[in-house]
Amino acid sequence: MNKKILATACLLASVSAPANEIDNLVTTSSTIASKLDLGIQYVGAATVMNATNVGIAPLGVQTDAHISSAEAEAYNSALQGMASFTAYTASQFLNDQGQIEIGLMNDAIDTFAEITVDLATVVQVSDMAVEAQQTQDVEQQENLQDFVSSNEQMLTISAEDIQVYNESLDDVASHAANAAAYIAVASDEAASAWLQEGADTAGVRFTDAADNLSFAHQSSAVLLDFTAENSSGYAFAVFMNGTDQFGIDIMASRTEVLFNGADSDFYLNGPTQNKCFFSGTDCNEDIAR
View 1: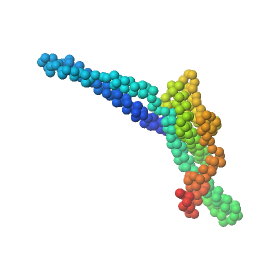
View 2: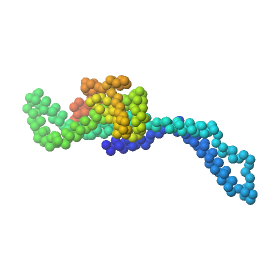
View 3: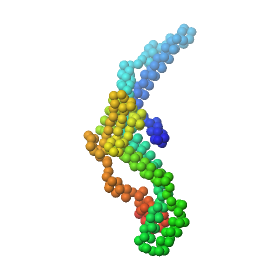
View 4: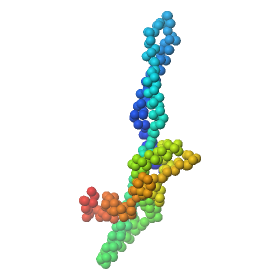
């Protein structure tokens, strides 16, 4: 959770208004501020000027500090633009949250990879046991026995190992689903605009909305719940299975997941598929890609 808070803070620190809104306000306000400075300077001069000190100012010199109606209108227009301006949109927010989830997923993958290396000896034992069983070779059976007896402590799986393995696997699945869902909604103009309208109605800024966002896997929906910030209650759901007005459908079947996983570098270079993982021999250069 600390990583998520830190990542969110870093992202929000970089959020800025579009250049045209800021530029307009800078230009128009700076023009009038300069005129005010000049006007104050002229009036200040009048308070100290007399017959013995400088004297009379040139005719009309004060008009340099006049503020024109056009300048005032330009400034007021820039103010209106800034007042209605959205600094951090739903689309930006969802995309940023998706990137945060990708970072958390990568952390979980690192943990999973580390514990998998520790547990990979099970694969080695399994390969040796299957071969000894299938061949009925006494020598191989004895080699297996020697290997197990000599390395029993290293080969034994602890309850802690299993907990780390299972939790990291669940974390990878959760963060991967969150990332895909958030980025899918961020990429859909109609869905993100609808959520933006909802946040505006609820009076919630997306810089403060991280705790309102979730992906409910069982219902296949990205949820934004603003009820805590608004007594009227505003909650929104965008479904990832194509069943609502936005038609976003990115839910995959178990078969599709396993098909893609079977073709991934992570799987092909892992201990169950790559003999090089243990021995460094029988290496297929194509597998490493």
